[in-house]
Amino acid sequence: MELEQKRADFERRGYGVAAISFDRAPLLKNFAERKGIHYPLLSDADSKTIDAFGILNTNVAKDHATYGIPFPGTFVVDEQGVVRAKYFEDDHVDRFTVSSILVRTLGEPASGQSEIMAKHIKLGLSLSDAVVRAGNRLVLSIDAELPLGMHVYAPGVEGGYIPIDWRMDETKEWFAQPVTPPGSKKLHLPAIGETVPVYEGKFRLIRDVTIGQIRGPARDLEIMGTFRYQACDDKVCYPPENVPLKWTIRLEPHDSQRAPVELQRK
Image (tube, rainbow, N blue to C red):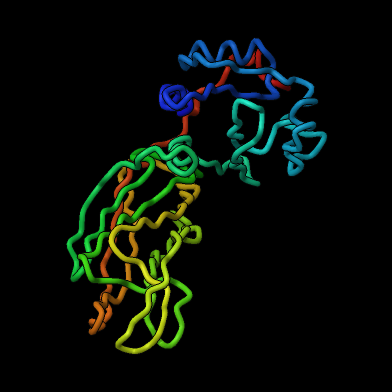
């Protein structure tokens, strides 16, 4: 359903969309009609194509009714048929959201939520999805902007300098993946005679967050963290700062409606 909602975003960038399933054609037809799906749903009832692509879910026992399903995931393929990116999970209950793939792979802007004016730095918080479900993996972003002449230290800096550090609160409601930092630049500091990795001007940090297997009615969910940094100019390094971060998303239950019994696998 999410793929149908984002289909136009892919098509605007020259991509078509399709999905493959081990379900039989009558069930897929029923699903498409019920949910208003207008892209191709391909039936691979014997899972030959799924197996050939190396995505057969080997966590499912061969005597189980759902044996033959693929690992949940997405291939991004160019016009020559070359896979440019792939997003797969090991557990069928976890999966990358379509919007997170648009943000990471195709450069779709994330949805802005808030702006924080901290000391010597401005932080813009955004996210790929405003509405999620249990097991969804979405993208959080921090767009940082420093005044002219200011810098912060990049991860990996040595010599006792304090690098930026995006920390996430620990909770069972979500699981934070490692940060994807942008490339830094080398800055020579004549005052101390050293060259160090820094960020200047504007830079973006992104990280994936997986929503836990939360049950219950729809509600808002707050994702909390902290951004630690030390801003410096060419002469002075200011005291380190810790900025509280918060993203608010809408958590909705999964669709529990099933296909008619006569179409289900036994």
